[in-house]
Image (cartoon, rainbow over all chains, first blue to last red):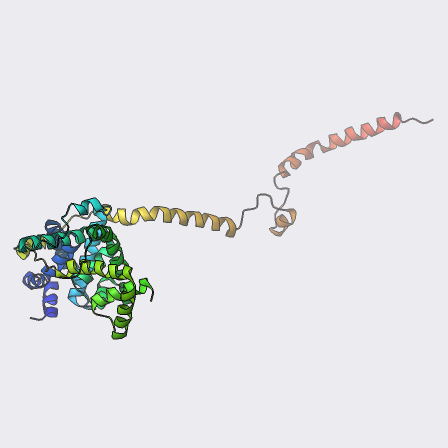
Length: 192
Length: 163
């Protein structure tokens, strides 16, 4: 069944049709929430709330955009609200980052390499979580979820030019947050 | 090329959006700028961590857990709405009241407490309306008053000095 047909049936109250839509989009919505919160429990709660919100708002959906885009708009708005309620953004200090082991060239063992990779991701995610909410959202959409500039513009309802400039500032802020840590561990951080 | 432009080009290179001439320009800049080489290395670290990561999967039985909640109706909670708009509405409404008050002060015609005589005449009103009862009351005394004044005039004539 086509997505439009599923949406129409969901509007008429067919829960099974909505279930198919949920199964199609649940991972993307969950990933978006997980990228923003980096907590599986919170991301799960948020994604459940997003689908409940979407189900209740379905009669207002006028097919002016793709269902996916509309759903991601609800997702980003809901996550934004959550982050605002959560309070101020936590500022991760360099000391907190230093609790993590630095990548050592002598670590050739696979397990240790995996461990270092995991820690590297934690450093970057901690730094992302310390960014302002609008920078965090755009980084998650582009660099974790991999959406195109045009899709991000539609989801966030901003122009592609704004996406470009905001993404540039967000990435630069992220680099500046991580830079002191990388200076301390030294070495070349080329992509593996 | 300035380092800020180089940074923009480095970011675009990770998006695969760099044109061949821009790539050449960036490569030439990187050769002579150690700060930008360091910047590139930092971006390598960041994008490496972000883009390697496999997408996480939602927790099991997602739909089964969600379905019972779809028909739940939630009581209307006004607090979030108030928190979002009410707090903003207070200063805005105060400002509106002040603006309206100031506008009213300057635009609306002021009621004139004391009308001029000509204004009374224009309105076809007697300007001495308030004092009329007093004047009417004095009318009965007028003959007596006239006698008194006449008598006074006579006395004054008698006392007049004629050398």
